[in-house]
Amino acid sequence: MTLLSVEGLNKRFGGVVAAKDVSFALAAGEMLAIIGPNGAGKSTTFNMVGGQLRPDTGRVLLDGQDITGQPPRQVCKLGVGRTFQVAQTFLSMSILGNVQMALIAHHGRTRDLISDAATLYRTEALALLARVGMESDADRPIGELAYGDVKRVELAIALAAAPKLLLMDEPTAGMAPRERASLMQLTADIARGQGIGVLFTEHDMDAVFAHADRILVLVRGEVIAEGSPESVRANPEVQRVYLGQ
Ligand code: ADP
Ligand code: MG
Image (cartoon, rainbow, N blue to C red):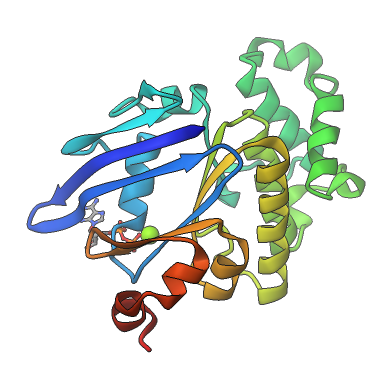
């Protein structure tokens, strides 16, 4: 069943064509990677799906509903989550508190914050932390964590909004290879286990080929190849223009 359908997206910035007739579909529980050289239009495509950018032409459908050009808040409400950057978390607050805050925001319970902040959604937050393997660190301030663990907490925070689709633009940037593989594995397990669609970009080709169900290759705003990791790896054009082989 199609969760996300992207139809003929175009986006120009002045003379730069950042996206040209970009189309693809993503099923629930599927991991789709978008790869391509710097400036290929990966982030532009992400931002048009997430509502941060309005396409010049084309449509974005989520569960068959047209969400093109909707503001990010609305897109998020409709079920498109993004992993947040560290800067958007509360560094001195506990990990548990951060996940509780995300749940409180998602459920619109901010008015109850003053009276109930410590107990609100505590059980649910602990369950999310358990899912990303961070339950035993629940009371530590997020600012104390190793980078790879922060990324796990960011995943828990994104899951607090109960997304149908998760957008991850370079989720493992700055991570060591082993941490990278483990975050990707965790993401894939959660996606497949819960039927969440994941759209991600990633520089590390080992991680892409190991974890993506399908790969879309962008070059200068255009899709030049799409398919299974095996077919993309074997595609002569991909090898020539992208993998440099
Ligand atoms: P990628 O994420 O694949 O590296 P981007 O989507 O960020 O690529 O960028 C695609 C092209 O669009 C690049 O040439 C980039 O310079 C240009 N671009 C992206 N965002 C903007 C913007 N806000 N204003 C002008 N040009 C932009
Ligand atoms: Mg980018």
